[in-house]
Length: 184
Picture 1 (tube, rainbow, N blue to C red):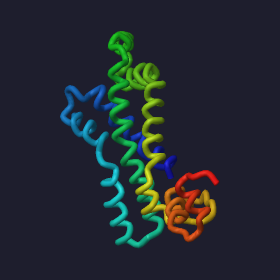
Picture 2 (cartoon, rainbow, N blue to C red):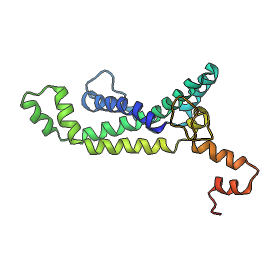
Picture 3 (cartoon, rainbow, N blue to C red):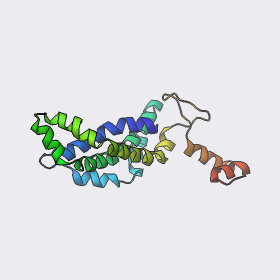
């Protein structure tokens, strides 16, 4: 589910960050304050509306899609912020040199700016993946736990937060130790 959330949120975040970095100063839609605010947005607020809507819809497929969308919502602000900052670090002399050769703006962005900031953009994406990898609330509400491993995204999936919860609530002492991470 974390991979699906990353695949959904990363392109949106990169495109929005590119818009802010390249056109944000003169464009009519420049929500810099919004992107910096949502980067520190409480993550609990992302999964509640999706969970409530999913329970009202009572569809298992929507719940699983809701988990992916909730994780993508957490990914987007992190990727937007890092893309915006990293594209600003690309020297203007590179952009000016490409413009002097007659390259259109879209080629300057894709061929010059993205290539100069590739490693930094990958680092931002990895930070977003690390942030959602530790996220438990969307998985508790949307993964519809399965006791066995399942790689089918259209069926309930096993996830670590639910397993830890079940072990902590079980009557067995050895499961309690496993849930709390105490060695045997």
